[in-house]
Length: 417
Ligand code: EPU
Image 1 (cartoon, helix red, strand yellow):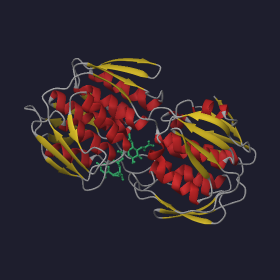
Image 2 (cartoon, rainbow, N blue to C red):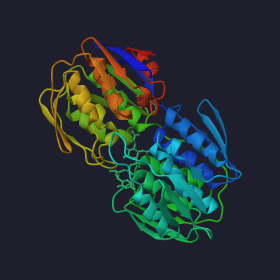
Image 3 (cartoon, rainbow, N blue to C red):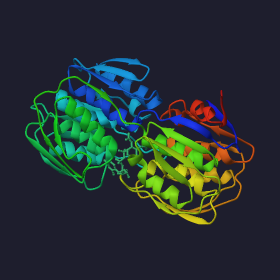
Image 4 (cartoon, rainbow, N blue to C red):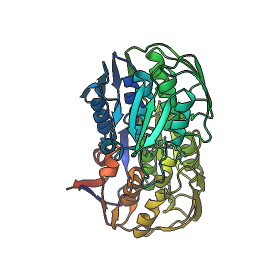
């Protein structure tokens, strides 16, 4: 299993380029199942979760060509509308194929995701929404089986709570349903909007994506398209925090500043200088931050996917900050590992109370999930001495060439096998 060795204490200086969004690329790949024509997707990050999704599409019968960031998917016919356990267990976003498969073929069999390091990951909301579109769904032997032999029909869907992939899943189903669908309390994340843009290029009729009410007028068939996915806002935010925690000056190129605005505002409150320059963000921070509280929320609030990285920064702050997690019930595993590096963090239910320390110390730590690993990398960049981070395969699920990018701006980081 690969590890990272990081020697802390070097400020990051220079420019880094943001890759394509993993969480946009995943639904975009699933959307390719909706048409028998080829779809070309660009700026697809080369990370483990994407490879897993490509394997899943291939399993269903789609042909995939993947060449350095451009992926062509041709789902001419789908012989096996199924997502087996072996694939789903490594990537919960596999449930994104449920909607497209049942919409296109009238049936789907998808393994149910279990829990994971950040909490339970149920798909009950996906299932209820698809039932509203006329699918009959049974859950047995660890699988969700959906049937709609006469096709789906439009319906009214209200999500009891906001779900990103749930919104995406049902949106992909609704575009091929007969009649109109209204999705209320929909997720407003940029990734939902990006998916709607792709589906529109494929011939779908969608209004309101990016707001909490999405209207879809179903069409009989979709066609091929060419689409470039949006830049990864979580990677961009991770780099902004890497620049700040290392007390450097970093230009984060190729991001959409609006997508990380909630973080930028927090970082400014905490004393970092963050400026927008020609579609890039520059961060400068020469001091320890001021302790600044944060509560995670759905977009446009502060992203749960940046909570762990922000906590690492706050662990070095002057004063005490409260970090509250409202999206997932168990997303504080990184706190225990940060504590091994000298961080002073107490967890009380959904809140972490972080008393900033002047110094973090290098240690051997274990990454528990994707964003937790990013948080440990950030802490290691500023810690005294050497940090060894185990299980970096979590990081490889969602960050493209992370050690190369960080090393190019001065980080002392290497991968050891
Ligand atoms: N939920 C339910 N039932 C459902 C679906 C969700 O109770 O059927 C609950 C979840 O347990 C959670 C909350 O609703 O407490 C929100 O979950 P959501 O469905 O929005 O999460 P997701 O769609 O599974 C996506 C991202 C996550 C990101 C969350 C929240 C993708 C592929 N994944 O997950 O990204 O944290 O939205 O923004 O888009 C990551 O990239 O590291 C990551 C975990």
